[in-house]
Length: 171
Image (spheres, rainbow, N blue to C red):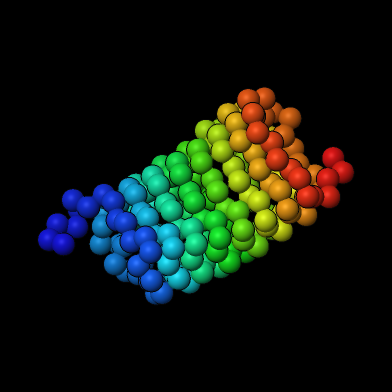
């Protein structure tokens, strides 16, 4: 690549990647879409130079144990399902519209204040409580096969799909 600033999208899906290439990503100052699905990546740090520009991140079906997407202020779509995630930091990702993090080992998720969120799928995790207060734009909510005892969904007035099967809900 002769002009790193001209690159806005990188697609390395299904390339058998097994290493962290954060240093390489930091060269792409205008990266908005990053697609790394179906690899074996154990670690990914989103470089600070990319955090304000990244819009779509698809890192599903890898070997990640933690993902820090904090301060990705323009991130609208995050697919990080089928990893080994125990932690997912979404601090200041308030533009998020679509979030799929199913088939991991996450025990807590904080999406309060994500008013643009319209789709969330956290199936097959270790969640015991989820707060979706104030998320009036959510249309699809799915948290089946968790350990939920409580979920706050009173404000989700536009939801057309709510799947909470196979949990321990008491309220």
